[in-house]
Amino acid sequence: MSDSESGHDIGGVLYQDADLAIIDKPAGLMVHDSKLARGETEFLADRLRERFGRPIFLIHRLDRATSGCLLIAFDRDVASALGRTFMSREVEKDYLAICRGWPEPQIDLDYALDGGPGKPEKRAASTRFTRLATGELPLPSAGFSSSRYALLRCRPETGRFRQIRRHLKHLSHHLIGDSSHGDGRHNRNFRMHGVHRMLLHAVRLSFLHPLSGARIEAIAPLDAEFRRAFALFDWDESLR
Image (tube, rainbow, N blue to C red; front, side):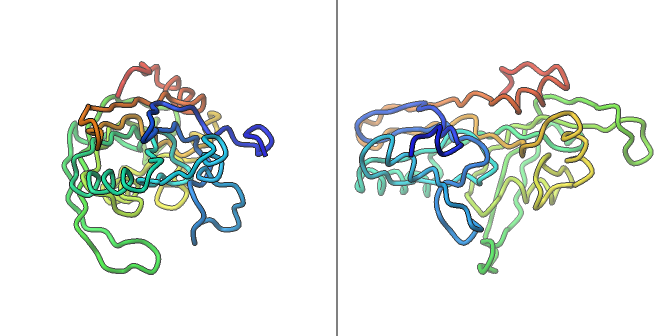
């Protein structure tokens, strides 16, 4: 089945060499089959095996509703080396998020999280949030005539289950479009303006190549619906 027949564009290749590739994952497509798949039959990993015609190894995961940089390897040894790099926190992962309210200009949050369904043990989790822009929509909220929103750069230092989404909920700056940890009223505000996706995008990935030692960096462009959200506030798309 081709990408067009599947109903999903699996995204462009942001970087590729003989050992690894960085894919621009689209929002709305599961990365791989799991207990969270809930009857899904299409998975990005399967599409990538078809595209490259060879085995692929997922180095990390992105939630179904999240878009942006996803790293894969073509060799088991390279995958192991990249896995160690991720575990050592030597990878820079930047996300763009749109949240409710206006957070402080910078927040370094350390707030332990469990491992998700069936994994109740809490482990340390830390995320740095940097406010890039603010805006308002003319929709009443909490006694005010308008609702406030902000664009954040999020850099998770750990990789816990839905870490950014859950950390934003803890801060009461819920991620827009998040149906599990967000605020339904604000999600509806954006749907009224034609924005129906969760507004979390893995915009940048940077790390040292495990074989050459060269610095690899990839930037994932915003998709049409994320750009529509930017347009609501006249934000510059170069913000990241």
